[in-house]
Length: 311
Image (cartoon, rainbow, N blue to C red; front, side):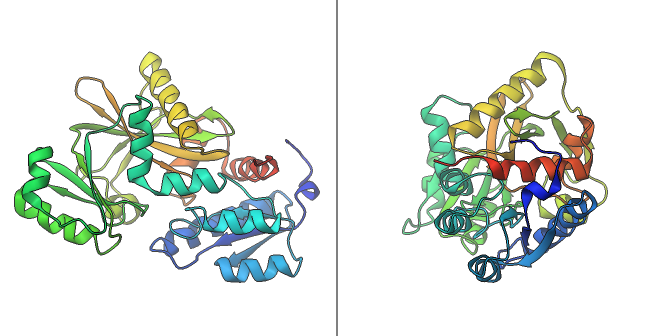
């Protein structure tokens, strides 16, 4: 459903903050979304975290939810299940898409089963011994090590040596007992934003440090974002793969698919974000701006995804 009438949304709760590792980013994203919706006449109000939101919903204070909680709780199907149980519409993916995409390991397994391109990988599960020699029998250095169920590059490290690999696994396990180890793709990093079934212009990410980690994403000012980052048939192919990858894991509404492209022009799907950042440094607003969609209009269109019927 598309509407030009802000009253059609009713009273909107913008849920932000929360208690995940991405709280600070969520607070910044939520502040931007809240201001944008208010500027368009939406009766929007900020609510910090899931317990406060559920209390307000049970009291009948809100008609729908704009979810801008990043990470666990808000982006992994937990909030979505609670809202479905209460019959409250919300933005973005439902329970299935949220839960699957938060789990990087199972996302890659689905892509691999469907023949979608993704880097070779190994999963260290909760009770597996962190046997570096076993990993190196399966995969060659350099490698990327990441917690299976975190976002915003939290806990991610590169490993170029055996010692770095052991340290990276131990670090990742401080965030999640299940660890994903991937072959390191030498090439360029891209992201494809998706809004209501359409792929927005591709962004190429160029971190000054050569690695797009949490610092490069949120703390440094020298990361370059080139949009459009790729054009022509190569862009169309990457957008098409991103849409297939997004649909394959049950994601819907809006989100972002991250892609690596190697020196031979081959694409490798990395992960899906179903509630991406909406700060001044975030990627979805940059892609939308390239497509002629300003920030308030982007927030409006994301809010419109809450009208979607869910199975």
